[in-house]
Length: 156
Image (cartoon, rainbow, N blue to C red):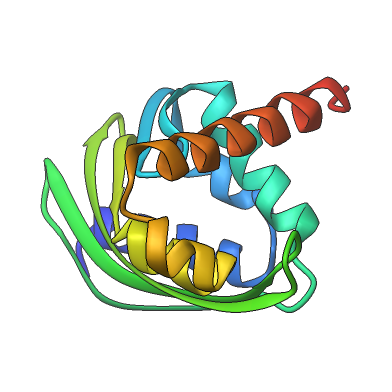
């Protein structure tokens, strides 16, 4: 197995254990993370997001597959099953991740998933009917950013 594929495996194995410090150890200090909810997070903000998500998780199940990598890029498929705390609704999110590496760490991590499908699961009928709209997607992003800011204020 390529060392970068092992790095991706370590990242998701840490996520399965809700070990945010283990996840952050896989990241370069200047990492850039992007997904449809948080959009662009850099460095410590990306690590703080994982810490927040791991800390909140009550019934989180993480699985991952199709891990592959070479000297420069990597990819994986991962799935998260959990209860969205704000609504109590079950979410099964399917995500495709891509990675870039520098100094044997992840320098760029991009997660791709359908935000409308996520909104339908997490928000119910409102998400199903309106989750595709910029207004609802913007509200989801603002709420996620507020949650991250509040979580970061509690960090030492």
